[in-house]
Image 1 (tube, rainbow, N blue to C red):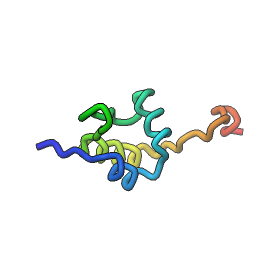
Image 2: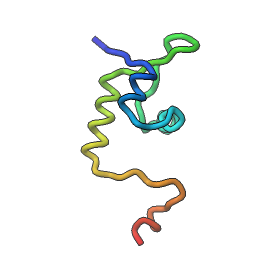
Image 3: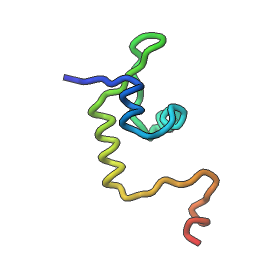
Image 4: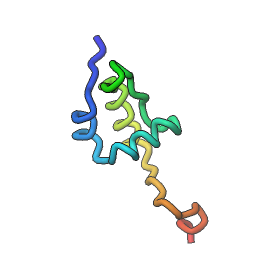
Length: 74
């Protein structure tokens, strides 16, 4: 059975802003929200947990805004 989590639960699991999560969703870098009503959204818990696990295993550090890969390598 699929378990859904609300925004408050998601923000308790992922220490990012709502805007950051929304931007990652739009880029395809985070699980998509499910619109339950016109004012209520949820995420599938198993997809969020898989995203967290993938981030742990990737070893890739997120880029800081404004930095290019060349600036990091220098």
